[in-house]
Image (cartoon, rainbow, N blue to C red; front, side, top):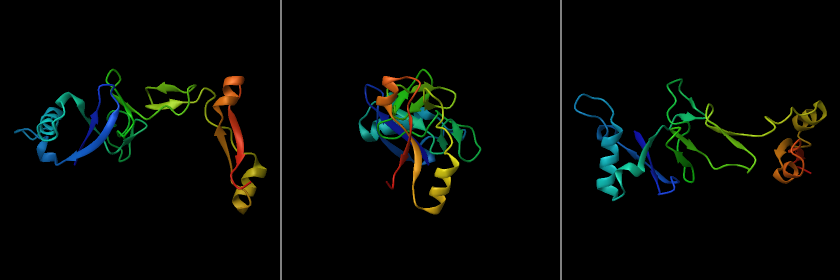
Length: 155
């Protein structure tokens, strides 16, 4: 199956549809995105150039089945198509996070969350707590050296 994202004039994904591969293969047996775009325009009355092929098996610029990643991420409703970088971007999680075109994901300004302290790990394993680090944008905006907060979801 071939997957195509329908985008609006602001490049925001409205929906994702599937096509049988026979709709996108030319006479020589080669996949052609334009064949799918033309088919979708004809059957869904939406401009061909507003249908962008996407890969169901690509996330974070990695192909789940060890194939070649395609367009950064599988498109989802609300994602944004970036034609310059050929990436479908998920919505920005926080205003301070920035695009990473290598991973096709948003980067936190302070990097990955810290590791849980041993005491919290033990409490999680025991099931008495559910500790994790969560991003706090308000905290970060007040002091750009802070942002990760240790949170217990069972408290």
